[in-house]
Length: 120
Image (cartoon, rainbow, N blue to C red):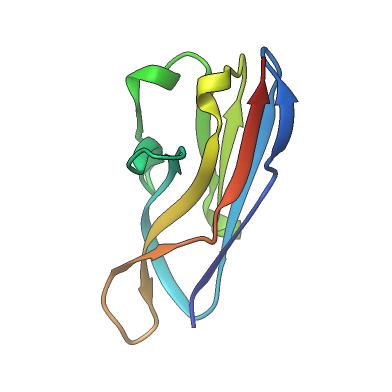
């Protein structure tokens, strides 16, 4: 069974920083793309940032220059460094990974979500 566990959310003042982590565990053969999504109240879930196994990255325009995604392939972990946080960054942040479990094909897996709240 594959599982994604997130950590690092919390409450921070505007202009502050937070670092999110997401570790994948279970019978994993390989992981392709890993990414972070967020969903604010009353809004659709949106992509924040994604990173391939080779290190290529993609960011939403709203976070470019402020957020940095990285991953540790040996630890099956993806990180999101969030700087210069704004109140509009407040949302539940979800980790998503495209994982190939042992003896199965690739599929998308989601974490349980972690709350990020930025106060003004």
